[in-house]
Image (cartoon, rainbow over all chains, first blue to last red; front, side):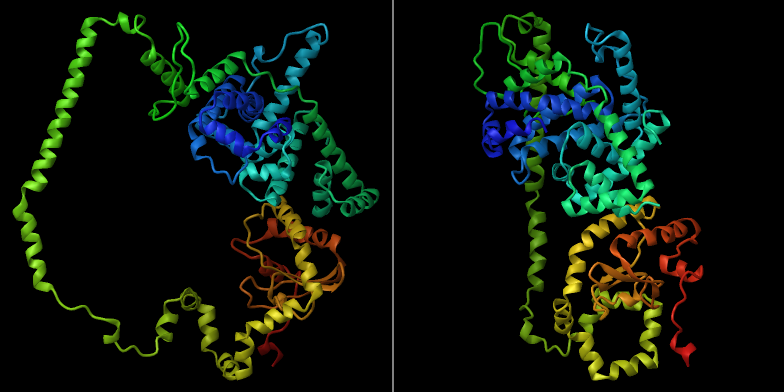
Length: 192
Length: 368
């Protein structure tokens, strides 16, 4: 994960101690470090940038509110990721209907000298195909795909985040990949 | 048909989580299996599709601004600048409505509460102030009334309290001590209260067995009773078998692959009695399992199938001396048939016996 190198600069215990005394600098560093990863996870789970932004804000709000009750037996990154995963799943469960997610136009960059309009439109279409296939997976399958392929977590990190054995992570990831491949194949993104 | 173990290796290889030995075996399998090569291609395509997916869009700038405001709000030592509005606090705020609404409510509410004099608060009309004051006075009056009434009624009825205590003296007596009771043999009473006893009396087959003359005769034999109760002997047998320990060390990988195989056939919740023994001595009683693997040589097993799920029928030899990598491949076809052709509530061992895949050894009565 991209933030792991930064985390190694400061042990969790020191960071948490600073957060607990409401050190504004510690909170700013936390946001700088985790804003993008949390938004990434929420976006892939929810399929909507606006809802992902709300979820990300809620995640940090919960971190700020509950840092006093943080259990040091877990690593900080796994605690925060778990909050993000649970927040995303809660929001999915509260949706009244199964929603087909289409990318908001403003979510993708406009055409530029490097990427013409056709390429940008192609990206948006490919994104829609992959994201919609992802949204059709059950929550437990979607979460392992997101953590492994979009958050680049290792098996051990996923097990720590989801509080399940590493063997279960592997088994679930294998099943999720097969299901996702089938859905992408049905959409013509992958070969048989 | 692809061996689930090899399929698991493919995924582990993709995630760079495969040890050199398994990687070498995977390479060998890939050279011989076109199906496995096709599966690997499909897996690599999926990985490439996900890698080439357009990146996640950048979070909206307003999100970062909101988060930084929250971070500033969390700090108690924020310096008040001219015109600075105290950001929201996060402790002890009740939750209302949806979460998004809660945040908005919380932000706006605290902004108003902490705004300096001369802005919004200064614009509040005198009537509103009077109304707020009246409501506050009413709340205080109600609170004082409730406290007064609550203090009067429970403690005012002192005669009721005396009436409750007085009769209690009538029943004062010396306590019965443990020495006053002489208990006999409690073994039977304790056994009746165990879970094991409940299971026995609720299992008709077990009750029939216990009432049978043959079983009583067997239990009458002191050597038989000693063998059943001497756990040290069993432990010693387990510890003395290298092959058994080796099979335990490999069982995690095998069980993981077996779980995938069961998931594939929709049998993840199906209870199947599987027993693995490193040697033919059968310390783990593999001869009663629905699926049994008994070590024949390093990396090779005899497979026995067809036992009863409750352990009341012996299984029989199905394949002899099969290598590890073929264990699940052989099982694949049987599980597929079981998933599609089983009867309601039928266990795997019973299915094999009913469909004639396995023929159980003759019972004692049949032999006689």
